Amino acid sequence: MSYQPSPYLFGGPHPWSSSNWTSTDDRVRGGASHSTLTINPTTNTALFHGTLDITTLGGAGFASQRTTSTITTWDLSSYTGLELSIPNADNKTYTLNLKDELPERRPGGRERSGVVWEVDFKGPRDGGKVRVGWEDFKATYRGREVRGGRKLDLAGVRRVGIMVRSFFGEQEGAFELEVEWIKGIQVDMGRYRDEPDASEDDEGEWDEKRWSEEDTRGSGSGWLCCGIF
Image (cartoon, rainbow, N blue to C red; front, side):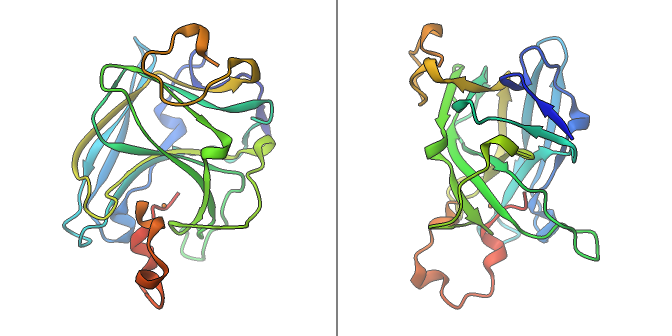
């Protein structure tokens, strides 16, 4: 198993590689959304882009890219959260996903559902940094929040993903998010929240998961509310 000691998970001193990522879009559920991760080797940035379709699944939809490695483990236990450097973004809400276990595969080859820790964010349209602390991540299972469950194993993160979803019709269409790097926030870096005016010295599976119990009780269509990650 390969451990990554650098605070940079992606980018920075590590070149982005499209072979380290794969798409997991709502097409696995009969949808029509699609995503691509395009690498610019000159700037060492990754562009997450595509189309979020909500018509095929009746208002639901998601598109995502996630890591492919089955041997890499990120030890993030010495950090207070993650920081993303985003040169360009649209006005859509994105989701950063983490997993500390790789799901088993079904007989047909598809992965079984598992617990995902996720946090929603918006990238600064004119470029900037987004900081998220570990307390901002919520454990979810098939798109719904898991309350009272175990904490994320920060010393053993096995998968990272970036997703855009419809929030049941709140956003759709073309999307673009450019990421320069993702790295751990050092303890002495202090703040970790969206601060477009922060200086360098400051570095430091849907909203459908918020369904009411009344809306979801007895429903047989839970798969529509979550991305496959």
